[in-house]
Image 1 (cartoon, chains in turn cyan, purple):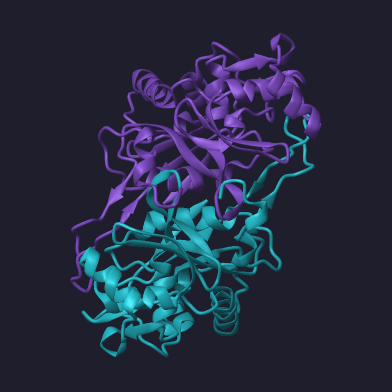
Image 2 (image 1 turned 90 degrees about the horizontal axis):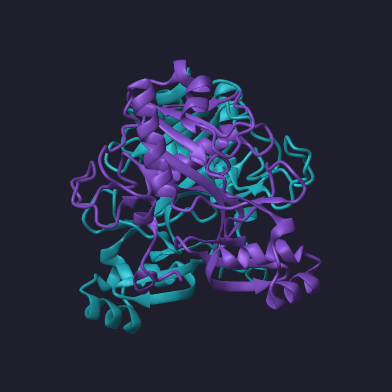
Amino acid sequence: MEILPVEGLPEVRPGDDLAALLLASAGEDLAPGDVLVVTHKVVSKAEGRLVDLREVRPSPLAKSFAARHGKDPRHVEVVLRESRRIVRMERGLIISETHHGFVCANAGVDASNVPGEETVCLLPLDPDASAARLARDVRERAGLELPVVISDSFGRPWRNGIANVAIGLCGMSPFADYRGQRDPHGRTLEASVLAVADELAAAAELVMGKTSAVPAAVVRNYPYHPGPGTAKDLLMEPEKDLFR
Amino acid sequence: MEILPVEGLPEVRPGDDLAALLLASAGEDLAPGDVLVVTHKVVSKAEGRLVDLREVRPSPLAKSFAARHGKDPRHVEVVLRESRRIVRMERGLIISETHHGFVCANAGVDASNVPGEETVCLLPLDPDASAARLARDVRERAGLELPVVISDSFGRPWRNGIANVAIGLCGMSPFADYRGQRDPHGRTLEASVLAVADELAAAAELVMGKTSAVPAAVVRNYPYHPGPGTAKDLLMEPEKDLFR
């Protein structure tokens, strides 16, 4: 399996044709069977999911929290707006559940790799739909039917550091489901459903980094399961979540 | 970056020289700069971390829980013994904190890919020490100084499916720490500490599968940070864990 960085993309601006930009950078490297992993940041930028903080009027809650922790109240306000539920609000950090159902720090609102001191970037409105549009545009322009994974780096309970996960998906199952299959000793596997979309996102992060302007990667020779699949399938229903 | 499966290993038995077996299978594929990712299962087998259930006398708690959920009380007993704290015990599943500090299902006790109907496999006693021994043995036999990651598949809060993480490590930092560095727009990164050891484990899983007897993978051309590092560094202190 190979993981090829997609380098040389220009700064992506609202309204840009992201598929065209990705194909211009990675075009000759793309082949049938590849999986395209794209960080949400460029997807969000192309979709105009940027907020000018000068236009944000913070609520009393945002002001009070920001004042206590030395944060920008307008940034906090954007985080609150992008949340449907606050999981934890401590030490200047907000862990919340986004409108999509993702549990992550600051509702995915982020100022890194965004031009302008007063601009923050939101997650795509519907990352699965973004992945589907990108897959469609790649198909139309290059004649390639490639699965698309949109990734972001999330913190995790129990463990230090952040790691890439899939927040949008199109063209493949997010899982490799081994239940009912037999291991080499003939024992039937019971609990083995691998979240391969998350593992693809994690693998791609290793060639992206955070400072090197590599917003996408091509995973070659991974035997994915084609078909419908969304990153929403990765969200566990609260009543089934024994870890929660 | 390339991820090469290490194929053709024989069934690993207690006392086997795992480094020799891995080198026999992957030897010519190994090169300076590679990272060796090994599933804990073969490490545990080589270390004799197997339990014959016929020798286990279940406690009343194990018997009662097993009876209510149609489980093997001896297997439940082994899970309890491998735990230092039970996080959740519901619907036949036990989420616990192992003696190492990992939070996972069934304390990592697992019957898949283990020979014998009556045998279960435990996590290595000290996976960081296992990784260090493996790195030392590879160095002594092949003259290669390679980082070693020992992996297992863990469930995660909030998300469906399991994914590979690092439970043992030697020869590299588990993190890529971008704090203080500047993104292409000149903005200083604040919260970007990537758990790359987990991402390497996840990437390797994509070429391993669960039924194909591929217990290791070589990651080539990943610019890891050499130096000391353990998988214990990945364990978040409870008082810092806002997700918990």
